[in-house]
Length: 182
Ligand code: AMP
Ligand code: MG
Image 1 (cartoon, rainbow, N blue to C red):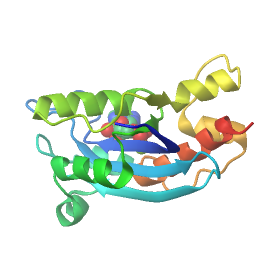
Image 2 (image 1 turned 180 degrees about the vertical axis):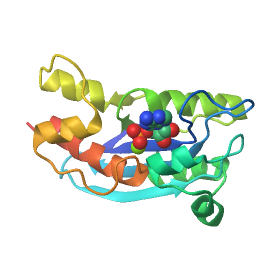
Image 3 (image 1 turned 90 degrees about the vertical axis):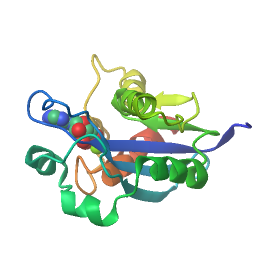
Image 4 (image 1 turned 45 degrees about the horizontal axis):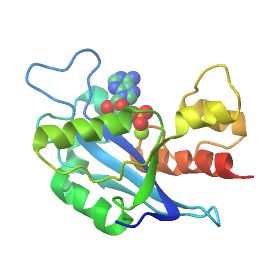
């Protein structure tokens, strides 16, 4: 498949989580896939959306709702299956042909794990960009920063709600846009 180097797909997921260890028998499930496109030439950020995903192996704890603001009701109402979410990524964001970016290694690992465990095809190309590492390298920082720290370093206000995939993806795209500037 030809690589489309026009736009980078920026992704940030939220998943079911608990304060300590996972409860017996529950696995972390993706519940929101935040995504947008960063245009390499214009720096424009488009197609920003949060795809809600119904968890198949766990439930949303009150701790998880506190962290993410995502409730079971929101997911019941608007959530799609993991399979459908993967289809949307491939079809509407060309994720198999484009480079994709996320903040750190977490999103990549969770996607790999969940696709393997549920027997679904991995929806992304092998070209993953770790914005957390790239930013620290670009700024010659002594250590990597959280997303909020990197935004602060750049003087860019955090837009929307931190720990909501849709807003995190948009903010991460802004950091990547700065990195890619000459
Ligand atoms: P983030 O992109 O930083 O919003 O985090 C992505 C996911 O990581 C969240 O949806 C949680 O599943 C998990 N996570 C992040 N921070 C915490 C935390 N303090 N405790 C437990 N899980 C967390
Ligand atoms: Mg997030």
